[in-house]
Image 1: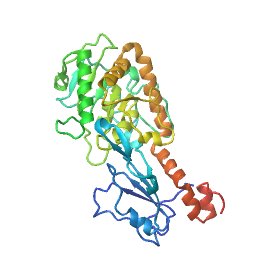
Image 2 (image 1 turned 45 degrees about the vertical axis):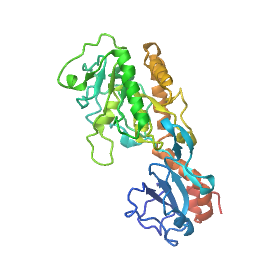
Image 3 (image 1 turned 135 degrees about the vertical axis):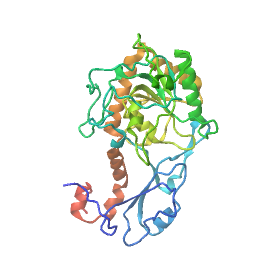
Length: 370
């Protein structure tokens, strides 16, 4: 039997998970009932920036909240530098990070689960170098990546990926995300140095075919890719594009830390380059720089260029592929939604031990007899 059963009755529940993004205070109904919600509420605050929900103090006064977890836990300074934690330790607000999820994967029976699938890339995207769009005979090959029986995820073999590098961050001249803009500009500059002036994707969309004589030659796509997905979802067209890249360059937002882009990149099987991130370091089993991902400093162009040059060098392709595959496996093992659930329950275990009386339920949660 499952270790938990969902219920719509808060009075019947032993644990209440209340998720807030604080975007619509007037529509949120905080769990404040000192009878039905007493000693049950775990708050998952997914709001951007260093803010704490205005109902927290009332929840604590009514003794409903037993733990508060906050994504985007840090103050960031210029060029995404870490300045401080959002909250003081006495506030008992715990850090939280996004994770990988099944929704970021491509099922093996979907149209996109084909090495020959043609991604719809926008005409204005910039393409550097020659890109091999030739047809492969095997449509669903053995990708050579670690597999986990819990997850079904189509991956393109590393050597068959069309682009050495992709950077699909939004670029807006007036954007407050100055670090992202800078990293897009650096990716353009590096790609131009490696492969000359870019073409617009329109040329390839209109049918121009590249003859690729050097399989290890540099190629890149820089620009946004459409989700073709309405609402809060992960569009397969976008996810499939990521699987055509050997290296994905991404960057956290300037105003806060943590986004889905990082985990989408990891689960695509590409090697991930991202700015230094501290919150994930506070989660259990943080990834290691140089082993599972490559981190850079958005304030240090020389550092960025040096690392991108190293990992795009054909002489280092085995190292790049190894990091990509190690990162993918590491996330499947340690940074999926189920791992975040484990983290939350482990953090609140002392409170659960104090408030849950039923011996059978205590045994399920691995709490000592009371």
